[in-house]
Length: 476
Image (cartoon, rainbow, N blue to C red; front, side):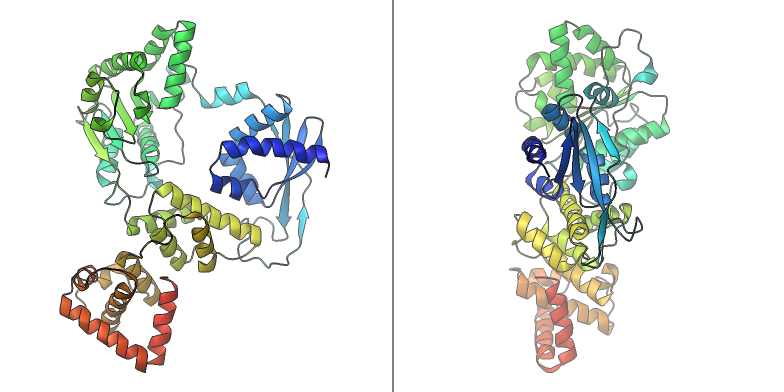
């Protein structure tokens, strides 16, 4: 390995570090090793086929721009992928023997740098006017963010239902505009793309455009510089379904808001559909023109709330299924109970679990999940919820949640509730009344009886004690 090669990759990492989250950088870029640099071609080694595919799917634009900045526009990136002897049947290296030999395939994947081609691929040029052909307008929708991949729960049911109605009859429902808001990481962007994709499925002839606020602001600034604001206005007034993400960033930009006001009016008056996403409700957005805010409130404002643990479990299981990964139920429950801040952080931890499993050629276990959560998740030491305890008990005893909360008095159901109450008393600060309510709507006396019963069994029944000990390992 040449010093020249190491220095070049070090320069690349400085740029990458500034443009990625710390967890993503540590997971996806620290394991990469520079191999050689011949002319304008930098060769790097990635630890698995999974790593290569993930980089290509999620970081290709960043890598291209980085190589272009360090090596120039003629720079190229070449991969050397460490492959195991199992071939592609097990691309994630899960449950592989630790001493399995590896061999390196000949570098064969090149990523040419061409910034202009990348820009044309991803961004619509709004100035190919007048007389632009409708077919040339790219929707900029991500096919992975469909309704099929959007897990419904009580936290998002209203917004999702409204989005489905809009997709079936854009511009013809009372949900116009549809204003979706929530803190970051709750699924706003996913839902926006899903509505757009569903609209195209029902109405393939309509022009559907997704644009984030940063793109629109850049286009507006360019139109001011090039004196082409009428062209920009004309372009957006021809859209049938306009989706604007992070619209709160229009705050404080008076001239931009004036232009957008005319776009809004034209589309709304002509029966076109408007969809906005924001991290704040319309009434909480500051430095936004009153006439725009009042129009945001014309339709439906729907918020996405933090998903409960049951919805988080569904999201993780759907993610694992889509990626072809089998995750143990106890790991799913543990991750879902600990990562409560937002969905994005939870999915990031899921990806890190797979990456660590691939790197170390070990199965995904509770120990691995605990290590990652202790390292990266700020709320990992927070109090365990009763909801999580119930899920752990049910999974361990192979009992459905519905049966747990039913009125059944079968021995296994009664024992499951008693164990849940025991662990709720041990690991939470909830009162006996709250514990009883959340463990099947039981009263205070029933909880006391359950606690006494479990305490006696722990002292007299070795088999029961072993069972309780196994369940406790998955809780704490």
